[in-house]
Amino acid sequence: MTGRGAEALRVELTRLKSVERPRIVQAISEALAQGDLRENAEYQYAKEEQGFIEGRILEIENKLSLAQIIEINEITPSGKVIFGTTVRLLNVESEEEFIYQIVGDDEADIKVNKISVYSPVARALVGKELGDCVIVNTPRGDVEYEICTIEHI
Image (cartoon, rainbow, N blue to C red):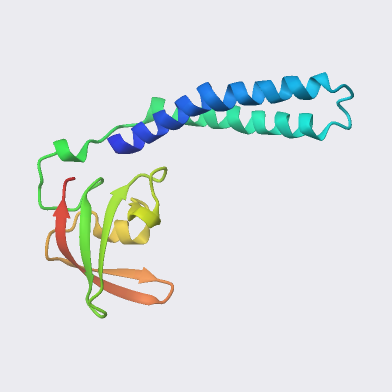
């Protein structure tokens, strides 16, 4: 994963441990004080939320412990599309431009132009060079893109 992606996970982990975990412990404590737990919806909800939070904490800790962090701006540009690079593409048919950064699954978010390295577009791009054309198989048919820029940012 990229350094930014790892930092985002660390921020989420800190929030879960320092804000969400104490909040849910307080909610469980308050629900326990209400008495009969069999018909206490607040208690049931709080316990369910606690399970989700603890599961997410374990998931993030596991991901961070196994992650290989890649700082793309520290890698000498080779002129090839690799994990972490930001690529500007031109749809050859429509002449529409797209800019994508190729990231890990956990960081992928199309709303901010970050695509998973396992996506069809990224798989078609990795290893290609500036000026190359790639064909991506999409549900609407094959789309041809030309690689206009490759940046290490």
